[in-house]
Amino acid sequence: MAQNERIETICSTQRMDLVFTIVSKGKGESVLDVFRENNILQNTICHGHGTAPSSILEVLGLGATDKDIILSFVKAENSKKILAEISKKLDFSKPGHGIAFTVPLESVAGIMSFKFLTADLTEEV
Image (tube, rainbow, N blue to C red; front, side, top):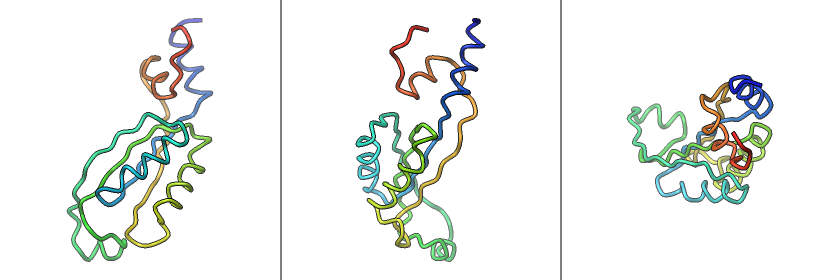
């Protein structure tokens, strides 16, 4: 089997989502705790500053504009469970506590990149 065919096979059998979580500055570590408890170790935390007018922030139920933005790679079959745990731990049912959403990853270039994202570095390339 050619290497390109192998990548297609791996990508089509293991669907991945990129989970975006946006919370108030300083709450990012609590989000990372949820991912770590679920053995999801490919996470990146960035710091953001919103620029939306206060009227829009009010409609969205957002308070302070300094945010922690967490990007995490999750197997698609686990996404709903992870979102539910984050929502519960950070009380997303209350306005201004945060938001989390997923974006499906359709493809990843490079077999080693894919293995890194899926934490499967045991198999020979």
